[in-house]
Image 1 (tube, rainbow, N blue to C red):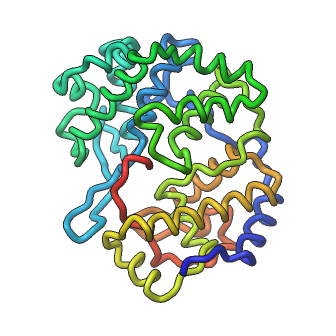
Image 2 (cartoon, one colour; image 1 turned 45 degrees about the horizontal axis):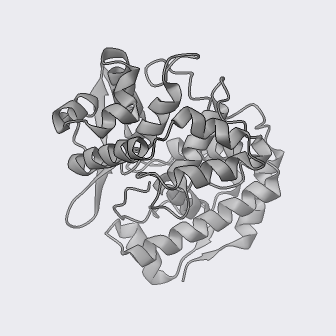
Length: 314
């Protein structure tokens, strides 16, 4: 049964504690092809709508994992969330920020949705994504939810992050994940943007954002120990059941939570570091270990992958 490897967690925590990470985190504004500029219109609505779609950037078949989702925009080859961000900014510029308002999404046709995420980019679950966008919009309209007021209400509470997670966890696209991946990602975006929409201190962000990239990095680092059957299933990149996926995700959450606490670093800093690590430890090609800041404490279990499980949560 999968277990957190406390000794490896300690080594990784000590390594991260010694790294100068204080100025290293994602600001979600530094790439004009993917993010609205500072002070742009409708930014809170925009990020709330597109974070609903922040999941499942890979192609599978009857056996399991095939490849990451990739596409080309303006001559640039992009994959995963980078592709979603670029498609979203293209719609933001060409159609307008009002496209991402709950009012518009609540009455959106599938054809109009495909102006945002065109069919030719190969998202395998496009109809499900459309339905999720519409359900999110209709929920906000039906319950008279203003996203700006939602954020303001969180800021005035005693626990802004807790209030934000509680409010968003009722919204379709954010309401099915006990680990709050999208909710936490949206909180980090709104807190880290230069406008600082969400007034959260870095010390408040203690919960890891657990997606398949983080699970892959955690397994390859050796933060989680597997038995032979689990190792075999993960390394073959075949479909797993919900119980198996949940176990690996739970252990990843526990391991990264311990690292955040022991290293005295914020979640934003840890997230940036491990997000960078996944670039050097990709899905389909050999890892470039010397470029990774965690190279000397990594157990280099590079044959391991992430649980292959289709979900709208991450």
